[in-house]
Amino acid sequence: MTATAYEMVIGLEVHVQLQTATKAFCDCPTTFGAPPNANTCPVCLALPGTLPTLNARAVELAVRAALALQCTVHDRSIFARKHYFYPDLPKGYQISQYDRPLATAGVLDVNGTAVRITRVHLEEDAGKSIHDRYPGVTAIDLNRAGVPLIEIVSEPDLRFAADARRYLQTLKQVLEYLDVSDVDMEKGSLRVDANVSARRHGDTRLGTKTEVKNLNSFSGVERALDAEFARQCALLDAGERVVQQTMLWDGARSEVRPARSKEQSHDYRYFPDPDLPPLVLGEARVAAIRAALPELPAARRARYRTAYALGEQEIDELIADRAVAAYFEEVARGLGDAKAAANWVRGEVLAALNASGGTVSELAAAPGDVVELLRLVRDGAVSNTAAKTVFAEMLASGRPAAVVVDALGLRQVGDDRALLDWIAGARTAHPVEFQRYAAGEKKLKGVLIKYVMEQSARRADPKRLAQLLDDTAG
Image (tube, rainbow, N blue to C red; front, top):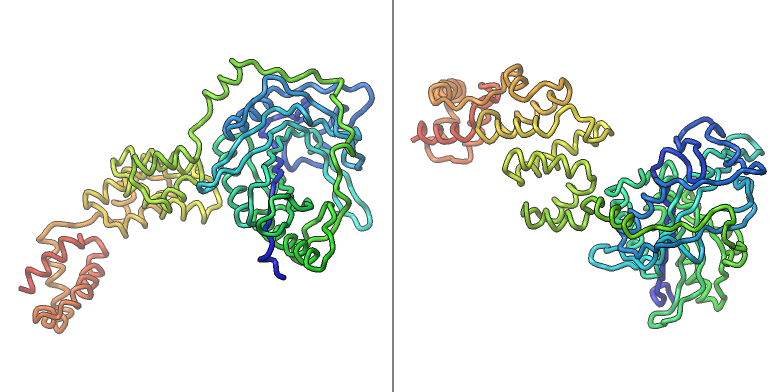
């Protein structure tokens, strides 16, 4: 029997660092890349007598995320102590939420498929164990200890590894639009634990799940799920049982390996944290946060489809980044031509961002500058090809489009007298081609236009040039 006889069942636990200036329960900064253990205090280090104080900004960001995921935000939630012993957890427990989480019962639309969200809860991050910096020694960096997190837990609604990847990409985009996190996987701002099990097609009961950790990219999540599913199917085919355990993903070897037995909730000995009162959210506060939510990707997609009459691929590229989408909209409004604005942003603007590795806010050409350039193209003052040269110079120098056009001598010439002079020069240089074209060999028209464009340093208006060539050939 092969893996095709089985169905994959996937649920994801996504840990997201909230974009706050200070930690969840103390005033230490959350700055990434600080020297080891620089961002610590007695609270982070769990020194005796220290007490946590909840970060109000973390609560606001967590509620934003929960509302955007259509969760029910509870007016009362409880912080609990989750006990486990590891060197990067000085207290011996993590402050989290257990049976009374911040929010429950949400949903995320992923390409038309509703993936249910079980819960969104607040917790603190642990420190970081560093195994490869010093030979034979594990170092501990507690800068990350206490950084505020939300954990977003999905129901086991996903059936393919590729679907899990799309879910994560959609979730990441929503969180970026909300500005609750930088969701940078390389920095550890978004981390994924994947629960996966296998069952025969047609079965309704869930199989024994394993949890795959050490996933630091969306492609890694997809590959790890496929590898673990294949391992489980092989066990079931051999008449063996799947053991509930935590697995580690080795991307270099493309394999999963056991790390430890999978803990159950009772293993963590949860109980309410006596140092933290219940988190109580009034209706007015939640309503104010809801009212301040930005337009989310799904809504923006629908609006672009109707207001701008754009295709799905165009929309995908434009809304992938919230700042790029805003840039496009400013160009479209200023130009009064959404299609031309979309083509330019998808082409030249995104190419410039890919080349620089920067953000759209760092471009030397603001949306108004692009509008000016595209108006010159629309009015026939600059060819579309020359406009690309002009845009590159605008980015390099910061000068306005009209100034760059004149400085580079790229203003398009549509005057008939000048065009006829250039045509006459090309006729003199290439008499045979002109004779063949006049005799009816129409495929030479493009060749002749190229000759004239070269002679005019690409300043000739190609549309008017084509008309005049027809007239002179006749």
